[in-house]
Length: 57
Image (cartoon, rainbow, N blue to C red):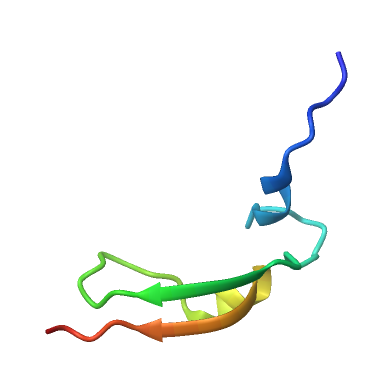
């Protein structure tokens, strides 16, 4: 059985190839989230073009 094409395979943070996803990505960090990854970790796997922290109203 042939392997199926999966466009999300590049977004796997556990991928050991060391390649970043080439698609531009934006991230929002919410202060009341239980936990969130540091921006540096996100930038290691994704092509971050926009990142912001949402203020508490």
